[in-house]
Image (cartoon, rainbow, N blue to C red; front, side):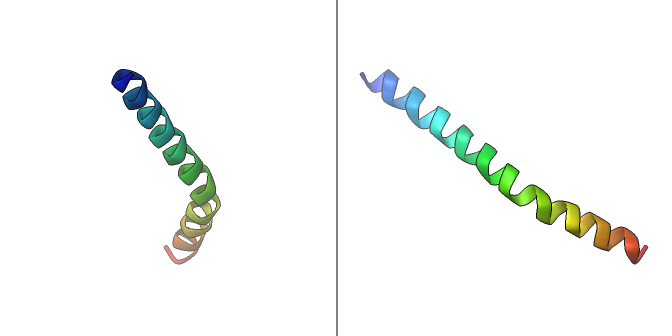
Length: 39
């Protein structure tokens, strides 16, 4: 039972990180474009 909870927490955390990465990607692209404009 505990093992199942650990697996669930791990997958939830990983999916949360994936969601966060996907949501921040546009901002990262904007930042990179902005950065190269001033290079």
